[in-house]
Image 1 (cartoon, rainbow, N blue to C red):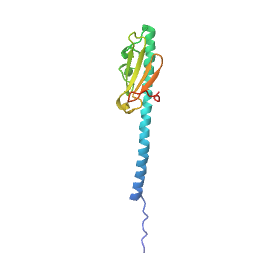
Image 2: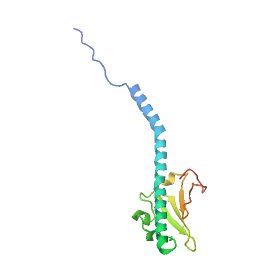
Image 3: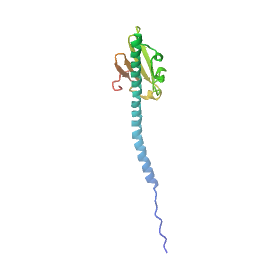
Image 4: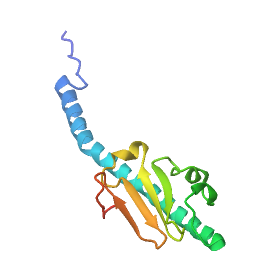
Amino acid sequence: MLLAKPSMRGMTLIELVMVLAIAAILLGITYPLYVEQTTRARRAEAMAALQQIALAQERYYAVHQQYTSELGVLTLDTAVQTGFSPRGYYQLSIATSDDQQTFIATATAASVQTQDVACQQFWLNQLGQRGAIDQGGVASLSCW
């Protein structure tokens, strides 16, 4: 009587190595794209915080006939009043002219967002003009 040879199931070592190699290649391609997209998505936090500051400045101006350089006196979210965007990716500040008739609000990259070399700082003024500066201090047109 001959015994039937059991059928072998499973993967060989070569097949396993091939699957791991393909997975590593896919990860190598997609991970940098993921990091870039999350960095770009966080920029919206800076823009929203600056627009919130601008609106609060206009409300302040309607009552006091001047702008303020203090975030704490404006009606803002608690995080923004303390000088940071809601998730802490940007540090916020306001500068006013000597006569307090103009202002410029800035959002400077902080925390993990400092890796965003293309858009290190965003700004918005009382006229609604806006812009961004890259890590080298050069105006960047693609941020807003």
